[in-house]
Image 1 (cartoon, rainbow, N blue to C red):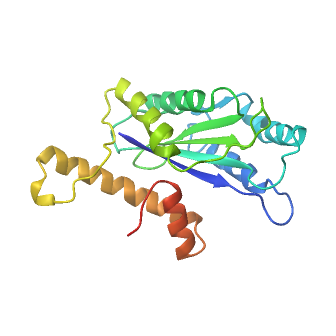
Image 2: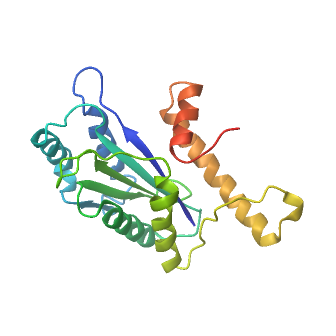
Length: 214
């Protein structure tokens, strides 16, 4: 089972406007997290020159300001997937979701107790020059279904559409599944906490990756 989430990478107010994009690309290609970059791949660019190529595309179409890119994370349940499976899933996700129209770098990190894959892609479509725009419902309509389909091919559990709310009515299998989701939710919360500058920002980031607050 894997859950997909997406964060946007905005421009920086001062200095290099694409600094956050550069930092994100450096982060996911950390050799200490990717078996010496063995678990790193790319689409329509080279990993080592991806940042420069993305900037060239943005400059060509006159789209160098505002949103610079997007960061997709695919988190797997602890102990369920192998590095090879996780890498294949994120690679195929990138090709199917981006349709060969964006520069992207993807990687699998194995430094935590659960494997997680990262995908950074340029905000500018290299074919049309139009900026990617995340629309409401995109996660439910396209992103998670692609991940579910790829997980199903490997015999992994599929993320259900709804969660059971009454623990007393849960079967053993459902209870175990609920615990897996609790672990994934905690991991997501810690991830957003690292990025957030305030409680409002934290809630905003959690909503961006698919959570609802009541």
